[in-house]
Image 1 (cartoon, rainbow, N blue to C red):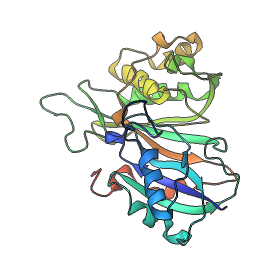
Image 2: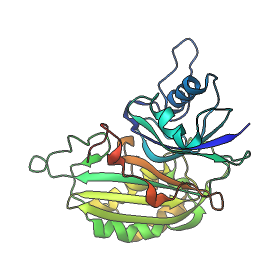
Image 3: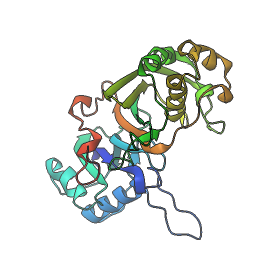
Image 4: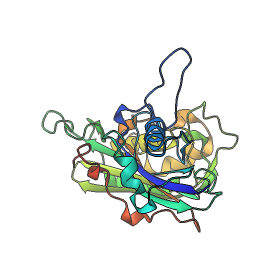
Length: 277
């Protein structure tokens, strides 16, 4: 049977993450995988597994989640994204659908991923917390120094044991990861975006790196301390785990099995009626 690849965007606010969750003696939790599988089943008349590349947590968003399923369908592939989206709730969209090779594995074939964490730094009450985009931005009352944060960001780049930046119960056999890029930019005077691309991420790794950079921006950690924190292999040396709402999965790259090019991805603000800029 043919296999199809989907590129998916979602506002994670009202989801219990990507992965399907069906607790015993309780109704299934609302997950992105669950609603996508329901939409596909409604379209083709049979239930199939829609395997996602990244298990985003509750409250985490995506504009570049990759997934795949195998099924016989009658809908032309050029109409497949729209046909599934029409059966989805308004906080999920299929951005692209295509035929792919029969053995395509969204998890195992991924070569790198990119996440962005967005922070609004305020000085309440003169600069109140974000209101209309409160579900996609983390607000801190501390003024941050983005120059210090960018200086520190370069210290995360490299291949090394990242256990200092993972939750203690990360559940992975190895904690060595390659971080290819880590940048800090300011799209507006009080907004900071931290973007990280890596071979893969440990549990809560991006949110902990963002929390560590926040401490640098506040002046509580020095930009040159990042390598020492990493070398300590001690979670207590890094910053706090920031909340999920500021985190967005931007893209996943498959090398020769190229995903939809990252530069065609919309900003998270384009999710219709969900995330206005």
